[in-house]
Image (cartoon, rainbow, N blue to C red; front, side):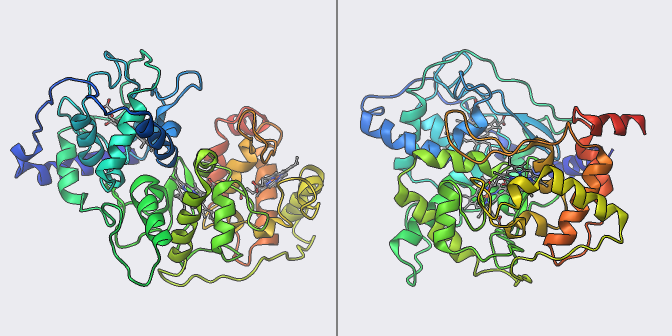
Length: 437
Ligand code: HEC
Ligand code: HEC
Ligand code: HEC
């Protein structure tokens, strides 16, 4: 219902915006072709590989590990599901007939070779800021992948949002010059070249703001609130500015460790941030340092939050729900989380985690439901999921206990509703309890 109302409102606004510009929305098809001479030199392909890792192309464009870049992964948005396309050089179903000019137009303007507007789930609003040389390197990389024949899945969007010309209106409303176009702007004389490199990577290629900046009701990033906290795949993406509720401040060194793998103070990524961190494993350390330098500077901007250091409060046993939560914690969690950091990849206390300071319980519940798994063939944090082991009531008691113990803020107001919502599809007693009423 809500989605329908958004859809109608959105369509109305976009039609209005687009109406006056009818013809402006039309884009020509570009002639078919492939890479020209010198456009796929090994040097370019090698640079493109690093850039593709830092642009997280594979995390959206790969649905099955054995068919890299062949598309098919669905991205859930408030408007419906949009499927990433096949960007291997297959001529029928991929980019096999795309010239560098067509690829460049897609990356800068979000228009495909045939002239159709692309949905901003493809973060071209960020890629638009890439240098010509970097776009050419990415082109060399994708055009030398193994071609895979796999047609794109149709998007699951309600009418009229599935009508692509509407996107012309969206672009007129929201697409501005990238904040940091090219390699060097915004020349900030107080900052060094590492910071500028980090700014370029974060803003243009790594599109950190696509998840960490709030979006308006039409799905565009709110430019006035950069990095004030956003959404990704149903997860809360914490603020990366002064309003961050993180119990421990994020230093440049901590960020560099977190972005490269895991930080012993803050812990590591568990949700949609995990593929970002995984992709960094093949990236030179200098690039990660640059990202960390820029991100550390963001934490100085924005409105002040109310940071208090880590909290670990005694939780009284007079509240029966909290007492039940404490018992579940002692039985299911304490071996790892009360080991004082002794069990690999655990922090000294869960009180170090931003997750327990979040404005809502989604990230905690998703971690409890699904656990944390390392990438195949890689060492990394492991936590079992409890979605099949705990009922919704047990999940609620546990979450309420963790919040009371590890956060100075009050209980989460929407805990019950969020549990019903998130545990609906979970296979265990949680789901059965929900179905039974
Ligand atoms: C956050 C997810 C996401 C990331 C990251 C991403 N893409 Fe995409 N991309 C998409 C989606 C979704 C589409 C399809 C959009 C549509 O159907 O309108 C798409 C479409 C494209 C297209 C147009 C293809 C066509 O068939 O029309 C190209 C080219 C492309 N992406 C290249 C890249 C490259 C190169 C990278 C990495 C630098 C990248 N993408 C990273 C989600 C993503
Ligand atoms: C086998 C050991 C183990 C068990 C048992 C375990 N965890 Fe974890 N947990 C981990 C590891 C490892 C991580 C990942 C830490 C990281 O990435 O920094 C983690 C992460 C977390 C996080 C942080 C997630 C985030 O994104 O902030 C929370 C909260 C958490 N666990 C709670 C629990 C609770 C509650 C239980 C019991 C129901 C539990 N864990 C059981 C090992 C365990
Ligand atoms: C696909 C969406 C997405 C992208 C892209 C992304 N993040 Fe995140 N990030 C998240 C989410 C969601 C979390 C929190 C939960 C998790 O996934 O572990 C997070 C967590 C973080 C945290 C931990 C904050 C805290 O207080 O615990 C930092 C720091 C961070 N991201 C920095 C970055 C930087 C820097 C970039 C760009 C290089 C980036 N992120 C790109 C979604 C994203």
